[in-house]
Image (cartoon, rainbow, N blue to C red; front, side):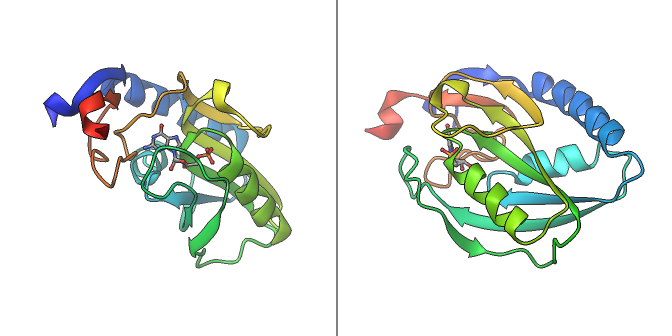
Length: 178
Ligand code: 5GP
């Protein structure tokens, strides 16, 4: 995969250090409360696994799959549920675990959707955020790293289902898109 990469934006060491800090913040903020982590498939698998294992909290985990990207690199703004939650969120404290917040369209839809089901609270933890690309304001309580508005892969993020297993976050060389 090495020759497909252009540059590394966030190293494995940086990700691990930041996850530990984020977990400490979440533990403190939710002290004494039950927490439901909702991961967004498939991109959030890595951050969910690594963040949840750093929590000292007894958490429950559930997953949703939504589509907003197709196989290209531009957000469509159209959100469709491909896999819904298994559990009922009524009255629960929900923390959405995301890989990346780009335009914010997917996330704002997801927050509204979970609130409409009667969740007691809905907050967001994301490993990456592209502040320059925001098209709707979304309040994100826990952010790993703010990055420039480039298409990135690794640490759960794919391009045409590849590169998810890279332990760092980087950009692809132009020939990959050709
Ligand atoms: P948004 O709705 O905030 O624009 O983005 C929603 C989804 O688009 C993210 O959860 C992620 O799956 C995908 N996405 C956004 N930016 C990137 C990126 O730079 N790389 C990859 N691989 N996916 C992205």
